[in-house]
Image (cartoon, rainbow, N blue to C red; front, side, top):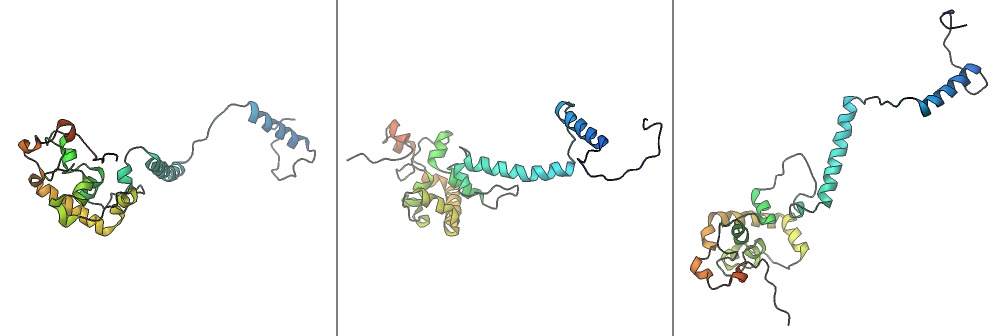
Length: 201
């Protein structure tokens, strides 16, 4: 007798796997459909996808930031990623990356004829912050270690000094530039030196 011939039926709960023919047949059909039936996916609700992306995206972003080969200098300043703009000032980023009013950077873009400061040393951020006599009032102690460099950005006093220094360099850039004639005392190879390395004994 088919269901169409007898519309008088009841829906109720019965215990599974006790030998009822209809239940056993339904179980077998469900197993067969699972193995051999057509594959299809039920789309997730939009709210679920939004929640998933809000959780997964920052995690992947942070992992890429921690393990990436670029941006390591800025990572010392902003170790945690966020979609909120950083409160750090422009001068701190210029100092960390070297992309600021420093002779080494200016020479790369042909805005200055040498990478040396007016004091005669290679003009990079560390030099103007620790040894250049023209910026003596901004100097802090330099122990030449990676930890020292990182601490410069985690210490409020050092960050304040950095902001003052870079602002001073921007306003007084002409004071740190060598005249072209004076630069002739250095050889071409000397003017391209990025880091001064003392000779071996």
